[in-house]
Image (cartoon, rainbow, N blue to C red; front, side, top):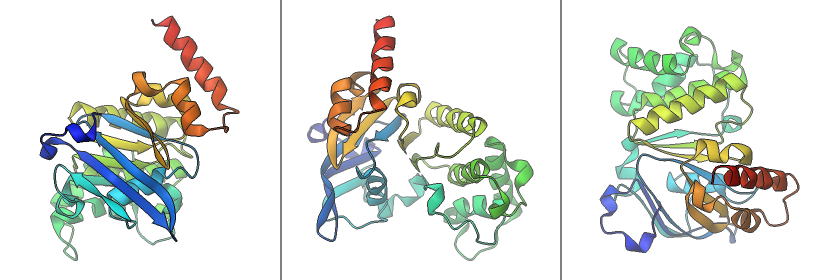
Length: 265
């Protein structure tokens, strides 16, 4: 991720954020946010609770109003580039009692191509089923979404995003509350998306897996602490700046990471 003021051709940049401020009831949640991301990377957004990680994604997607700032998706505002973007929300933010089956939910990812209020034809149902196969959920196509486990629900929402065949994916804590098999399935999907030149931004909270999962990081605590390649910015100094005094369990993660880095030097 390069400095935003050195941009020469914004149309080639998947996500560009400049001078973004978001406030709730006049209290800043995000302040003076500047960054850009490179194409074909899996990028982690990390920081303490209340740092504004989910708000950042929602602001980029126009789901919360911004006080100021400029957000571009491949050089255009989000509304013009909506078809290029897939979104996996936090599982707890979804009404799982809504009476639809898993295939219906995945098919929603195709509405941009089908058109609203139009029937889902066999062609699009096949595309939805293919997306479900990719996340290992084809056998659950006609199961009510409320009857699925947390990990299965997360896979269905991932399949919905995959069905869009987007160029950029935003995922809000996709690893929270899932079993080991689902976490492994998500990681496999991330590798597949990256191999196809897609860009993925993920809100993440488990520091122990940061180095393993992400090419680059956005380290956030209301303001940007650091952005760049994980190997360059995931340091003890930046972790202290990001998490402040809340480092009880984090110290062990930092020390483990430092030891591993020395081993591989």
